[in-house]
Image (cartoon, rainbow, N blue to C red):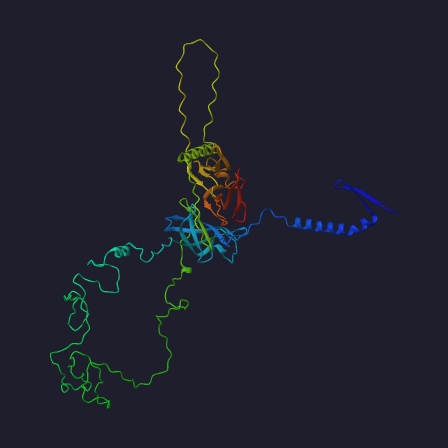
Length: 519
């Protein structure tokens, strides 16, 4: 019994018999198995986004820390380096515990940090040793100024002036020369016997009185007197020996039979004699001062001056005059990326700052409530009165410790405004505000992040203090580094501003003390 399957394909009626279906069935099963395997492979290899390979200039490790000090930055009274994060090429790790054996890698000895201010390098800081303060690792070291590039040969002003000056002028110069400076009198005589040569004009040139000459001293006699000297090594015939010329001869002594009997003995000449005493075979060590081996160990007596044992002033607690700066350390030095924003119109910055201050006063409750509306009066035929001018608006409430910064966190990304301030008072009366905003296409401010807290609730909602902008992942994009300071503990957090949103990328420390900021 034949079974037929009819179906339409491309407008044509196609019929398959039972025999033809059995022939193609293994091929259909193989195709279905391949599709199932491919679907399983795709389901197990889902990626959240495009995987970008690191560039050649991307460092394998990049550490971000915060330098805290009191006093002047170049000569601090006390300082410490607080690690924040370490970028290992893929993820941001906690700098306080990354590869801690026992001290973390970010605080290892001889690690050098570049101190940044708005993206510009302002100094260096070398880690000498590390320790723990209140259960957290901090580093101690010394501040160093930036190295000054040496001037290229011939680029100094003195060398350029000496190069431009003609050598014919009789002027003293600091430039070293390998030949004598010519004078106005002409060339000096080349002969050392007192005779002079004439120049091309037939005129005898002047003699340089300061030029040293080497010649044999002569006397008026033309012949030597061979019998006047007892020295067997008399001068050559035709010359008289110089009485001032030193001679080398053996000292005549009765103990030395081989000495010349005709030469007188020199009483002042030192004599080297062999000591007749038996010298003991005793080993001794002499100081070797000319050894240039840098790895040669040295044993010294007295107080040690090793750098690793030096006591460096450490910063304890949170003094009110403490200052902070971003520090970055990696194995490759790239070009500086400044985070400052250039306004097209200088007046726009003032307008944006005033608008952001009004938002901050509203968040802190400093703006007075609007006056109640006046009741409507019925129309009464009375004499017209002069309108009373409205009272002048009160002065805006002051914002204490106000800090206003404008950043360009990526190339052509626009302005990102950050304002932090607080009010006066004690406990719940002392309030803190932090605002992050960006202008829209119409010039109006969009608040992307707003954090408001008071001194009585810092453990639940810590105070956000801006440190600076920093490139934590070496991708030429800046992140905002905030200190989250509570009543008894603190953290450092990195925030990225992208596409009108503020996202927290990383927070240091073991515990999370930051409450979600209102947006």
